[in-house]
Image (cartoon, rainbow, N blue to C red; front, top):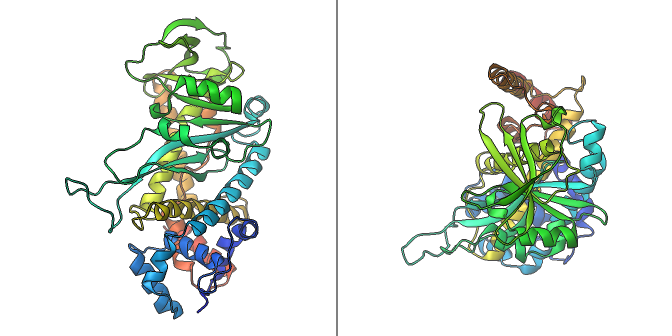
Length: 432
């Protein structure tokens, strides 16, 4: 029987941005029982829905849509390499297309012409590893423990889109180092669709440091890195670089210098004092001196946004556990997660962009953000300091609200027209 879910108006709107890419995605195949498009829809529904197991999800679909789809058929689909390749191709095309749109807009920090020029050719990504608990059927190790499943993700700081870089571990006790995994990736994956003449910057924690590899990626592929100094790292022969201490962008910068490691590789180090705490932090990068040290410091602080994305995936989409035991299934799950996450971002922007007064509907959340910003500025002022310009300029929300996800989950199969569904969301925002 053909798999034909009854799409609500909201789900149709949710899935619409993905449809053009389904036609060009690789490894398509006409499957008469579960067509590729319906397989994709089912995966997205599972991420958005509140189903704590695959059995619960498929039973819900059978009961609601009277499907003749067996449990075995559903789980066997996760072993299909062709389906994985098709899904990965779809996700990659979708993410790369929107990365180009975001770079063209180049409005990360508003309309400041200096910042637009400095960062205009850079795709900006925060990268990190994230773990899911083992699936119900994953094997236990020799100590009768199920090991967590690790993945490497990147968050595009220009548009808040997630991308899946690699499966980080296979469930064994051995957990590969982030840089070891990054080295194994092909350059096209690392550049994430960046075109000729465009640059890519990854902002990673200390697990992303390898000066020799940074040097190679920069010179051969225009891939740059930004990280923090490791404890006990020996850096020598500091050579001071000139920077404008009066420029508000550089507020908090103590020093900008070139240093060398034990192998003699030169690297740039920025020393920075955090205005609200007085703590001094040191950043390392292979970015050139044309990028102000204050920009480097603030870009690193934006790395925490990927942690917020992981929190959103875990606590609002409830994706805490692997769906199945095969490595192919684990990679498919990651691809479904990033697609559902990114489509949610787009749907939220469509809704926020259509408000009559042009202001966000979730005013309670906006008030919380303004209150936190005010408290931060008071704290900094009390210390006799001031917030750097970029801390004031960049005000993008780091997460979609739980109210939005509750609304989306409720309306996945609600026949309410789009206008009515939107009014319900506005009511939810206004009263809670």
